[in-house]
Length: 285
Image (cartoon, helix red, strand yellow):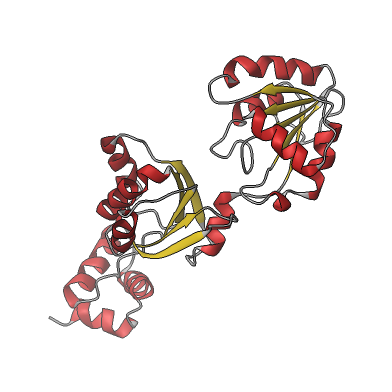
């Protein structure tokens, strides 16, 4: 299977443009220039785009087309044709980076398949903003998007994440936030640390941190605005270090082919128990 360069000569350029998630002054400095230079702007909401363009003081000369979940399959071939004809197509969603729980992936995949250069105007992202302010570990994380609306499907999705060690980031509608938190408490345990980030970067920004059970009670009073949920990953259960458990762990490694000496050393490393104690557990009745 061959590889493809990240820049392609000839043809047009697809520009994925990050837009503010709250304050217009958070717009990337390059955004105004890219909007002014575009031949075509594909917007998730054309009215919001017009408002953003006005606030940025951009003289928009591009052809503007709508590009949202309901029409992206039908609209993508035409945009690829424009790209192949050498036009500069800018994709902007309502807020944040296109393709991240927003339209965009389908067009990017089609452009890549057609040998079109794809670039981005980096900028605001609710995922990274919520993660950064959550107070939860950020060294490893995963983005899970929106949970299923149906309770059974949501419960199954969360059950599959119960042992996920990375910090998890979710998007949720305000009217479903209480139910989502309750389902998380059921799947992960009510004491799992989490944060509800509401109206990020906006006037009424609020970050609520605490165990899931406490956040469920808080959400019961009603939640408004754009919501991003951040949930701590699962912590590994401490290894059992009683004599019977140590003896069984050594036996398992011996059965797998390790010498007793090596098996004792491996169990000591895995449990943090000194080798002499593991040795005594194995040899002393």
